[in-house]
Image 1 (cartoon, rainbow, N blue to C red):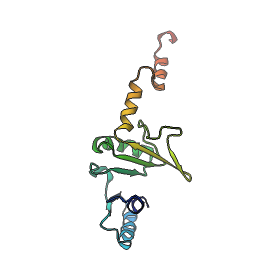
Image 2: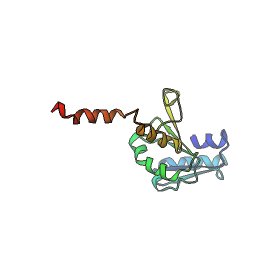
Image 3: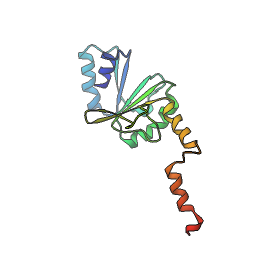
Image 4: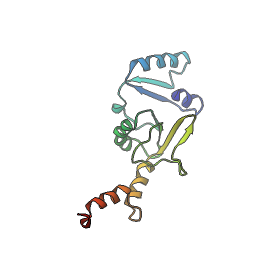
Amino acid sequence: RILFTAVEEFEAMGAVGYDINPAICNPVSVKVKKRGMGKRIKIVNGNFFLADLSPASVVTLYLTTSGNSKLRPKLEEELREGARVVSHDFPIHNWTTSKTDPPEYYTVGSHKIYVYSIPDAYERRKNILRNPGEESRWKRIRDIFRREDLR
C-alpha cells in the first residue's frame, strides 16, 4: 500500500519495495502489473540490507526495533542529506524524530509513524548527548554505581 500511495497520491517518480519473502513479493508484483504501474513501482525479492539506498529520497520501514537498529548504520552511511526515513510502529533507537512536540510519533489509527530526517535524526542526538548541561540518564546511573563513597 505504501508504494502505491507514494506514486498515486504523492506523485513519486518511482518506488522500490524489498522483501525477502517471495510469498509477499509475487502478489504485489501482480498488483503492480494489473494497475499498469510497472514503470514506476519495482518489487525486489531480495535482501534490503544489500540494496544501494543512496538514490532514495524516502525510505519506509516496517521492521522491529531490533531490525531498525541493525539497519541504522546503513541508513546513516548511504542516505543523502535531506532524505527521510519513515518507520511504521517501531522507532529507531538513538535517533531523534523530526516531530518537535510530544509524542515523538504521529498516530494513524492504532499505528505509530516515526519520521526522521537525514542527517538531523542522528546529528541532533549526538549534540544532545555532547551537551554538558544535559547528561544522559544512563551516564548518571553509571556514575552512581562508580561512586567510591558507596563502597
